[in-house]
Amino acid sequence: MEALWLSMKLAACVAAILLVIGMPVAYWLAYANWRGKFLLESLVALPLVLPPTVLGFYALVAMGPRGPLGKLWIALFGHGLAFTFSGLILASLLYSFPFAVQPLVASFEGVDRRLLDASAVLGAGSSRTFCRVILPLSLPGVVTAAVLSFAHTLGEFGVVLMVGGNLAGVTRTVSIDIYDRVQSLEYGEANRMALVLLAISFSVLCVVYAVNRRVWTPWPAK
Amino acid sequence: MAGEVNATILTARIRKERRGAGASSFILDVSIEASSGITILFGPSGAGKSTLLDSVAGLARPDEGRIVAGGEVLFDSARGIDVPAPKRRTAYVFQTLALFPHLSAEENVSYGLMDLQEEERRKRVEAILKAFRVEKLRRQRPAEISGGEKQRIALARSLVTEPRVLLLDEPLTGLDAELKAAIVDDLRAWNAAKGIPILYVTHSREEVDALGVRVIALDNGRVVSVGAPMDVLDAPRRKKLAQAAGFENMLSATVLDLREADGVMRVRLGESACQIEVPLGYAAAGNRVQVAVRAGDILLATERPHGLSARNVMDGRIISLEQRGTMVIARVDCGVIFVVHVTPGAVRALELTAGHRVWLVLKTHSCHLVE
Image 1 (tube, chains in turn yellow, cyan):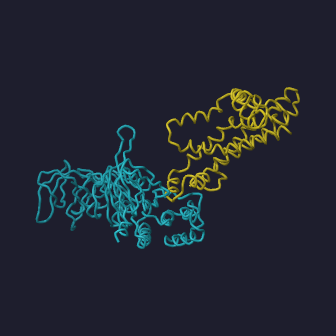
Image 2: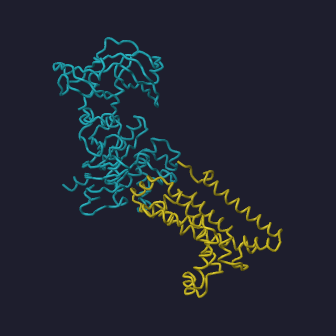
Image 3: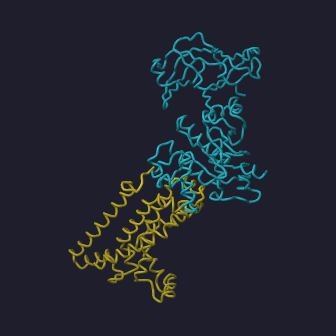
């Protein structure tokens, strides 16, 4: 149960942080008019195609005592990043980044441009337009982004194993716990955990699809 | 005071090139002036009307030019002035209206007043909702509101901010004439006190007639004529403008003879044997002219009519009938093809079908000569 709790904590932190940093990135991707935009788009999508072990490997190297991130962290907090919960969060942020950014970009782009023009003509600057028009109309996208990054982080395995190792209560997340139990032939325990994860994943996806089908949207489309 | 007078004037000199793929580049190059009250911007789609409005509102940036409204310079390429859209105090009602779907009518209207005190804001919203007769709809969302009322709310939303200039981009399309007239009356009543310039974009001939004010005709990015609707539209100078003005029939014709005493001349249409009488124009026998006729100005009869004052009766056959909304578009072959508008009721009553023999009746003064 400790592992499940740890996974939940990790996923919640990652989802919350990703919403905050994902929004400006998504805003820029949706509205900027820059030739080199495809570069950032590819970079954001990279974790989708990269094997988690590759991502985890580079994250580990960067976080190690001789890596740039690790050095910085030691200078700031006096201890290393690798094999800690903070390190796990940082790696997971990278790993789940596209799952937060892409739904946001899609929903920002879906907002009628003339509504933004109307807002500007009525005297609203871009931040007010964002808060009062873009964000409320992108609510399904925001929910999707939060839910997907939560669910994706909950189930991660490769990155955690590379960066976090397997320290009970610190970095042993539920998927690693399941792997451990299978290795030590505790199939009953493994099955219990796996079922919980299955149930959570399914409900989370139900939420995403329902929201995007506008079944429960707070307001009608037109 | 000179300042007071200038305060209600909008002047815009705009040059903007739009580079599309291949040959589709387009240059808007206009200089316009609008004083207090409604000025119509008229022209076919693609003439540059919306680009002009976007430039005035600050949503599009001209390559060069100067825009002054209410005595303040909003844009001046020479001096590097480009006031951002939120600070221009221009009101803009888009063709799609762009009401915020997640906000109620009242919240939509108060959107532009966020810097005001709560009480002042409520007072202004109240007054404008009343002026545009939509105070009952304050709690409704746009999706729950009917067409004409949405237009009223969009107008109220943009006018409540006390703008310097009002830009209307075909705001009343899709409404019937009566509803349009009622909304325009309310707009006029509101502007009687404020006296701001209103640029009203339309490509509908009926709207121009109904508003009956100064018209600036645009075509292909240029101003082609300025004046009263009669002057600008009834002697259409350019073919495209004429078609946009509702002259569905553009026929080339050869002048046969002039009858100065009667103020008419006879022309032969196209290569056909069909001859009609049109108003006298600057032409000599043998000259080629263009005759423009509105589809709605042609009468259609199933028997040869007699005892009419109309001078032009042609017989022909219906080629096709096509229902479009509450109107049926008939194409009739009289040697040349005429497009005629009839009502669905008339089609039923006269039992019109393709192939049916019919007579078209055309008043001399419904035929317009195009240069």
